[in-house]
Image 1: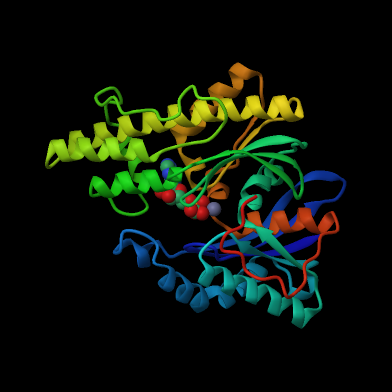
Image 2: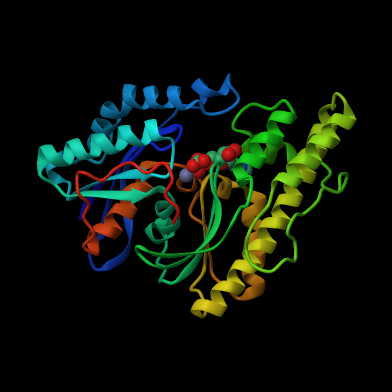
Length: 341
Ligand code: KG4
Ligand code: ZN
């Protein structure tokens, strides 16, 4: 079974073809074409929705053609067409969704509307055999949440951020330090040469019950420190990056611990902890969660960083999982800029 997946919810235009394996778990990525718009947004210090939508229109048709060609398939070989229908920037979502519906209409193939967050949460099953139920930590530029993944289409939110998303915190701190967008990878790189103990930044919500996050206080504490320093020198920047990253890692580990506890109380033992979203590419976060899972005797499934950030293969895979369970969507399916899991 082969599914074409289209992703246009933020600043990556992406198309991919994914297949399942006969009689085995997991899937194969036959092609995964991603065109990042980062260069077009970088001068503005963040994603500009109108620019994103126009850039998706410019390249999506050719990208789909390339995804099919690199997978060595024709459109007629595809069993279903999936697109991320949200959550995300409405202009971008409209473009990917409309393209998928158009292809479905023209070919008579089934159309599957995928929740972008669901796609991040199901990606682990593409790369690793993993049974339901499990806990997923979704950390990206727009979202930060812990979700109980009970089955395809059966999700329960364990906790989420009450203010900033983790990626947003990385990006805002990077901006304060004069680093280019997106800030996460820059902070991670500079943190390697910094002293994580120089600044004692707050760890909001640490030790609290539940699994909600709050990150704006941490961001504000960093801003105050930057203002105090005036013009931070290279070493100051590295030390702030390291101290900030250490704080956010502590918060994430503590909140994930809370999420696992909530899950265990409600659903029993999870089969593992899964991460997804752009921030899940961060090595310090991955190492800390590896340790946490080792201590808790829990399996940790971390898809490769390229599958953590936005791409078409995760949409195609979630579409395939839905398709196999009989989910189909109507061509009248409206884009959902907000679509909580
Ligand atoms: O999932 P994603 O590609 O797009 C959204 O749906 O938001 O996530 C992008 C976010 C950005 O905020 C970026 O700074 C962050 O992920 N990010 C990282 C790293 N790589 C990307 N944050 C921390 N460390 C990284 N290595
Ligand atoms: Zn994402």
